[in-house]
Length: 246
Image 1 (cartoon, rainbow, N blue to C red):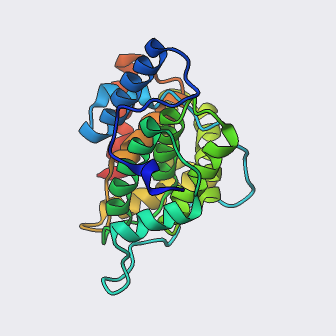
Image 2: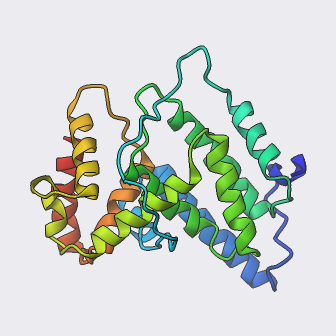
């Protein structure tokens, strides 16, 4: 992909979008979506969390993966990560998408190489939710998937694992009741085991990295469980977040 595809310009609209109104609406929409996780706005996060991943379920066991930050001697720079993405995906990306992708990649690089970072399925669900929402309407579905793979691979992580874990969490949550989703600690199963692992790490001092993607993943779980009523969502959100992060 040419370096120009990741320029800071925001004035060029994708050629596939028809009409000035459609382009401006698309820009405004993506700006709001991006600001949701940037600002940590709960209301916007709930809205963002309403979009699912829509991917194939894999047979790989869900769970926390030992994919913690590298030691200080071999941590890649932001430039290294961006360079790996550009090398992996060489096609031009329309600027209203490339600007957001560039910003996301820098932010996630900082999360990825935080000393307390460890991959978990809730984080994966949060990122997949944000990515699929931001890239909704991209001109080519195959290219959108290729960008996703190049993006995650540039962070030295597994894009297939992200998709599989996100889908498993969505399907699990859809089978729960609005209030029952917070009862994972008393149940057995792959997803329950993964959530218990997260809760145990969160209980340890300085061993858990709470991020915007993790927060969005939590709200997506609640949305899949039909806990979308404001009163129920507030109550269940508190109980779930307390179990996972306190």
